[in-house]
Length: 303
Image 1 (cartoon, helix red, strand yellow):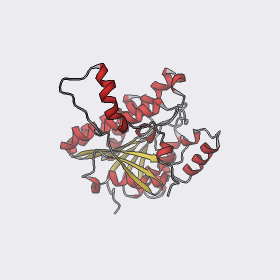
Image 2: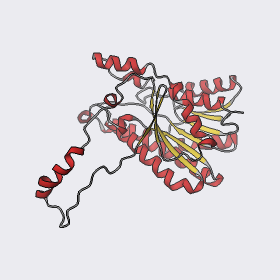
Image 3: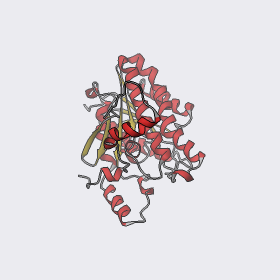
Image 4: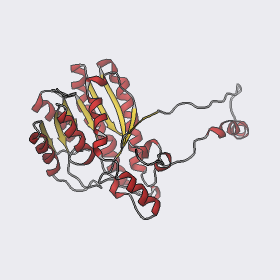
């Protein structure tokens, strides 16, 4: 008996990479898995029905049960069909793993409106659409688990990813709101920022020695390292875990904080433009947060 025996788990973007590893492990732990994958390229273009069905074939060959869904989560109807397939094929849905995504990296002042909208449509709107479709089922059965994939590109920062970073910070707000709104129904919602080599990470430039070194470090972090935490959060053993932001990097697991007040200043008569500059700024400046990129924060080799 696995940790997910008789559970039904829907995983988006499960045809390759992290999503595939999650789908396979959940099935191994006893879950019936809806494997969603639109089959797009790393930049979101095109479509291919093959990847989702291939993962389902792997699941069934290992003695598990799965069903392929090839809808795009950027379409509300397509997103809803993932949950509809779970209920139609397996009678219920117990967990939703929002993992699907792609990259359109461009420095901010050169980013097109289309590249902004396309990334937001999948990474934020799509996660909402899938989550919303499952909400009524979770509420009715008095249980359910959402696991949403965020990124340190949003939590910390990175170059050339305004669209992706904004969406991934939005995912944190979405998850926290779901956790607050649906806690009374026994529903929980958490985020994971994954570090894993994938076809998306393979799009990172390797023009400098520092970039090449970074990519070589990332190749050590396989998608299979992410899957155990996801499977646990899908299980009943995680019934008291909600509203959290985790990170996984090889064999390391991180817990991130949400933004918190770190300093305050009070002036009984209120502030003026002049006193903000003369008094407030000197009081707070020593606590200002410097601009950093994710590789600067996670500067040590994966362990």
